[in-house]
Length: 399
Image (tube, rainbow, N blue to C red; front, side, top):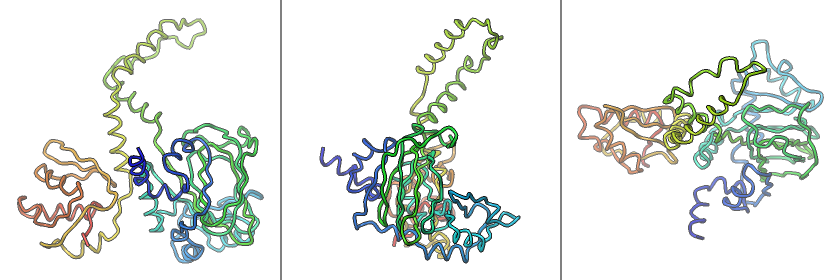
């Protein structure tokens, strides 16, 4: 049992670093989707490698800033986009700095799309958790608060990079809210204060979706933290897809509700019997394996491919003797469709001839290879396959 648990932990290296000293098994059993967890700095974390004040300063000063590349927040008085954008919607850099000087938090939404280190972090955590991962970065000036008490509709990890921030965690206002189930201050009260603590650089906090919280910079320096959002697929998503598949194969699911069902004197007894029959049919014909595999393949397709080095490798040419390998943490599904072999992976479906299937499976098993690996294919088909695999982030040079 000890060996099995050790191997299980090794499959979650990045998650383990976020929750240490707690183990992954304990986290998934006792905390995940259940309650918050504060993991103090263990002197081995270095979140500063992911982002820094200097990187944000450079980004604000030199990068193209289209609409949605920056947001701002202030608990009071509130701030609107019109306060820091031009009429075109583009970001007014000077206004951003000016409002920051006046106590507003600068938000860099989904900054993993612009920062390579954060992109790799998200890609690796996605590989471990099988969900979409995004990062927002928050820079809060001294003695300021960006947001009033609220909850998020997705689970988050908070990674403190610079400065100090005091956190208040209250009750769970909504248990496991759906994505897009919004916080409404008129409906959701903070309730009892359950936890109060100050986060310092290297600390990491896990907050399940639905938990009310707020945070204030209490240090003498700006507070910089990364919010890692976990955008998970839920059982309800899978069940709805299974129901759709059953309905496609059974016309009774597509029949109309009884005529006159909305009348006050409508007798629901027959409708109730029909409903129970449909539930029974659904239970008997639901194809879990098929839909589960569909979800896996859709997850592969919607991931962002890792194309680092693809242009440089494509500039070298495909020469005999040059060795290639599968990229690290590459996820895929491979199947035959008629005269084609289809590889579902980050970025979509890649299609090849059916004669390439054996060679592709060898590569996708993690074996190194060179151009001669496809020497049995006609003309330059082998060269074209390797070029395609490079272009879509499947393989890289085996250096």
